[in-house]
Amino acid sequence: MHDGSIPPVLAPPAALGDHASRAHDGPHDAALPAVAELFRDHYEFVWRLTGRLGVPAAAVDDAVQDVFVVLHQRRHEFAIRGSVRALLYGITRRVARRYRERAARHVELVEEPVEPAGPGLDEELARRQAAAVLRDALAGLDEDKRMAFVLADIEGMPMPEVAECLEINLNTAYSRVRVARQLLQRAIARHHARAHRRTP
Amino acid sequence: MIEPLDDELRRFVGALREVDRPGEAARAATWAAIDARLAADVAPRRPARLSWPLAAMAAAVLLGLGLAAATAWRGRAEANVEAVHQHAVDPTIHPLEPRSVRAVESPQARSGESLQPGPEESSQPDPGESLQPGSGESASAPESPHPNGPTSADEPRGLERDTGESPPDSRKPARPAQSRRRPADSPSLRPEEVASFQRAQAALAAGRYEDALAALDVHGRRFAAGVFEEERQVSRATALCKLGRVDAARDARRRFLRERPASHLAERMRQICRDDE
Image (tube, rainbow over all chains, first blue to last red; front, side, top):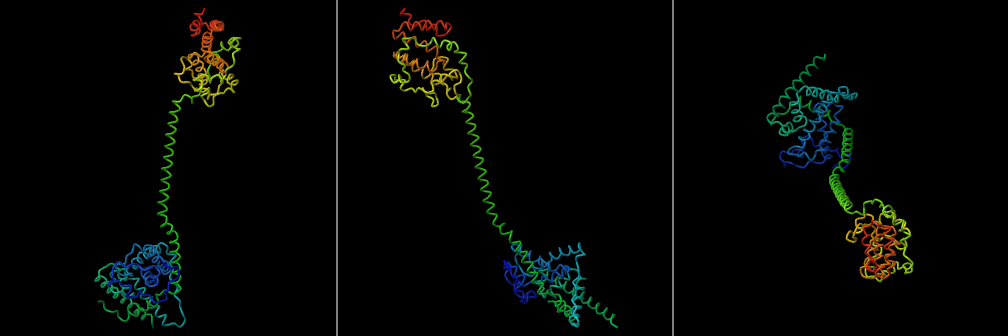
């Protein structure tokens, strides 16, 4: 189990398409790594997923905790038949659903995170604005298409792994990603159009 | 194979990747919280794992104790049942009703003075218990079969209690075969009284009349108001007659017939020394 200390998480996480986390060409039913190791390698992946799955920003950290705690408590029930990230995605999706329902009941507790603003950081501001545009556009998609795009184009998963995470066949995964891209492109275009109209 | 993102969408995706990243402080805090929760979960789970064998052992111990208690209870219950049966069979455990000896033998008590041996009889040495060695039966038969029975040292008290206040343990019944008549059926018959009288009867039957007289004297002193009073007078008259002390035998006969004309031994007493007359 874990040794009680904070794992060495400063190393770059292997969540973005690292080979070790992909088990498509490896043996099935591999042993689940220790929770500290999973946290070190997949913390950012889980953190991003919780936000993409609609968990309010104020509750993301709690949801991430729940994911790894559930993973530890039920580790003997889990068997890695494919991707570790696919397993994490399944757990995160269930945890996120619970947090979304809780947030819907307690709207007053949900607060939008305060965006830190630094003076003279135009590039950073533009990045934040672009991220906000894409985040809003993603929020406008249904979950199937949104998560297909997130896993494939943001998390960088190969399409078979995306299909595994979403528990759909590969062609459906391709289709969802294409449709999501088209919808996002239209949303970005509308953003540019509104920006042009506001700019004198 | 899916086609790559267009440049614009790739820029937005890149911006989102850059912005939506947790800080190191958030990572450390999240891990600390996870670690604390796992530690809290681990603490109670360890004894839970250990509790299986402990619970099994505890259950086995409890089962064993229950079986032992049930066995002990059953054994005690059976013992009680046996004790009840024995209690029902053994008459010595029953509390005995005080024998109405005083009422039965009140004539004897009244005639106690006249039943004292005559001058010739009183001149005989008091054999007491020491006279018995000459008798084979007296040597084999104990004077007081009951361990708690009165001894010669208890004679005065025995005489006093003989009126019906004798202790319960001294009232062990004699077997019916040992006696010829009522004493056998009497619940208040004392074994030592029966044994003492049997010694006298045995000496009389064996022709040892002196020993019989001595034994009857001892019996008369110890059990003056006993149930063998009439039998003792008949036996005494018989022994006197056999010893040739005819006058004494006749006196005893006359006194008996005068005091107990309705006795069931009256006819037998009349036959004593009759031929000599």
